Image (cartoon, rainbow, N blue to C red; front, side, top):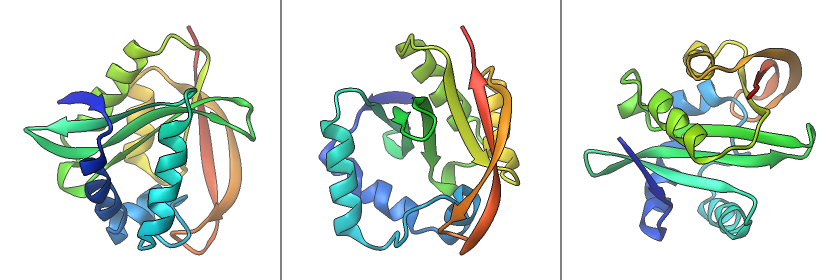
Length: 157
């Protein structure tokens, strides 16, 4: 597994990964319309142009397995990590390895991460990387069409 800067050729793979119904359900807080490639491209253009964001593609055996990033959550007004792994790469420790590597790249602390409360895999990734429970919120999950519980995790020094 390696992290590298996001390249233009990665974007079609990343948008296709978002189209997976199982991945969307687990992530819960996904795009309103994951099939809207123009909206995806516009969002990623904004993210890639933001100098405060640290974003990397996750590459495994030459294939883009997903992405990992650090960005500023406007609601928390704090730095937050997020990650997305294509379902064909699930269960191999790739998200944990990618987040671990991102945490080596960025020195900002504290950091936050969040996951749907029933997303045991994502919660496990945060906990393996040293994040601790910080609270719980409720929010509308586009991928599920309903409001759900979301757990917030925090990583100190």
